[in-house]
Amino acid sequence: MAKIQKIAVFTSGGDSPGMNAAIRSVVRTCAYLEVDCVGIYHGYEGMIEGNFKAMDARSVNNIINKGGTILKSARSVEFRTAEGRKKAYKQLKAEGIDAFIVIGGDGSFTGAMIFNQEYNFPVIGIPGTIDNDIFGTTFTLGFDTALNTVVEAIDKIRDTASSHNRLFFVEVMGRDVGHIALNAGIGAGAEEILIPEENLGLDRLIESLRRSKESGKSSSIVIVAEGDKTGKNVFELKEYVEKHLPIYDVRVSVLGHMQRGGAPSCYDRVLASRMGVRAVEALLEGRTSLMVGIQDNKLILTPIDKAIKGHTKIDKELIRVSDIMTV
Ligand code: F6P
Figure 1: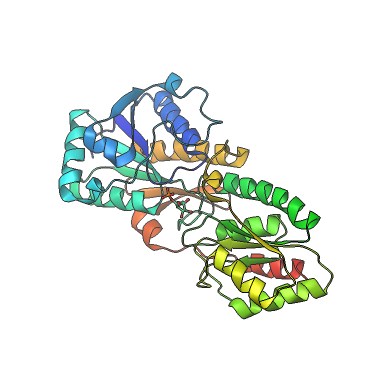
Figure 2: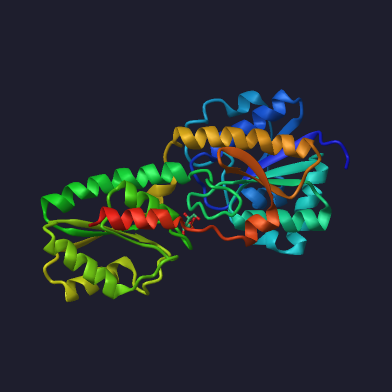
C-alpha cells in the first residue's frame, strides 16, 4: 500500500456528543505525526461535492466541550449509488486524500466498507451514536453523555410525578436497542423499563403497576425505549393503563432530540481522544476496514463488516438489578 500522507475525517449519520472531541483528536494526531489532514463537511454528501477544508492543530481549538459536529452531518442517498461513490472517489483523488476516518454508526460504516471494496481505499471507523448499538465496542461516543442527559431529565420529571402522585411514561431514544432505556432506567430509579430485547407483555406491566400501588408507592416512572416491541407507543400505553388501572393519573414525556445534544461527558471526551489517536495510527500502520472500539478499557480493532453485522446484547444482570430495585 502507498504511504499515507493525507487523511480525511468526517462525521456521518445522527450526531452524538463526543464527535467534535474525536475530530479534534484525529486532526491533532495527524499534526503530531506530520500527516496532512482534511475535514469533509456534511458526511458523504460533502465527499461527493468536494466540500473539503484543510485542518491543522489550531482548526480544532475550543471544540472538545461542544456537542454536535463542527463538520456537520448528513445521511447521503447518493453515496448509496455506484455513481455517487465514483464521484466521491474522484473528489478524494483530486484532493490527494489517501485514506479516511468516518465517525458514525452502522449506516456510515456500510458506506465505508463498500467504498473500500470498490476502490481499495483505506478506511477506519470510529463509533459515534448515542444508541450504543454497535458490535465491537462496549461504548459508542455519546452514549455516556446521553445517559446523563436522560437521568437529569427524569430526575426533574420525578419531582412532578411525586408531587402529584402521578405515573409517567418517559420515551427515550434507541431505534432498535434498549441500552439507553435500561441504563438510564436504573440510574433514574424507574419502576419498569420497556426495551425491544425483552418484551414481557402488557399484562406484566399492568400487574407490576398494580403491585407497586398496593405496596404503597404513590408515583411511578416507566421508561420506554422508542424501539420497544409492546406494539403500543407511549401515548397508547397511557390510554391502556388508564383503562385497566384507573387508579393512576398518567402523563407522557417524550424526551426526543435533547438526548443527542449538549456538552460531552468527561468519559466521552476521553474515549473520543483515545479513539481518534488509534484510528490515525491504524491507518499509518497500513490497516484498513476496521472500527476502533473499547473493551475492558482497552482499545481494540474490529473488522468493519463484523461491526455492521454483529448485534449488541443487553446486559441481563442489569435487568435483574432493575427487577430487584422495584420490589
Ligand atoms: O441513532 C441515533 C438516533 O438518535 C436514534 O435513537 C433515533 O431513532 C434516530 O437517531 C433519530 O434520527 P433522526 O431524527 O436524525 O432521523
